[in-house]
Length: 184
Image (cartoon, rainbow, N blue to C red):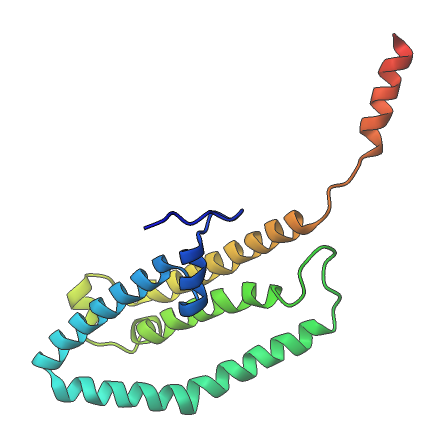
């Protein structure tokens, strides 16, 4: 097979054709196939042991998401965008990218709450005996994780804004240089 010339971004002609056909690079496809295989394995193991429970959970999750969670997080997202749209964007920040720095920690915190809400809200009975922990620690830990997630997101946004700003030419640098020339 003849070699195809590389472009400035390091991709070859075949790589660009694959990305145009698939929509992403080959590594993305491999990760997707690996995650599908892992999911298929987990579903197969669960369905063999408890098929009715899996079916009820799946239908319940779909209904709860579509009827309860989707309207809630859509309203929350629209509210955040409408409230913060009235404020001016920081100088050098890309338009509308800041909302993702709010969405990602909120989604991760919400997922943790959704999965662990019986323990966080002190609603579980069998767990203290199984884990050896009292239920009082889970609320504080969830709040701490939520705070860390939002803090890391704020730091990432600050770095992004800082990187997007054009470099300043300080008067102090040129002034100190001219002083050195005069002193000699």
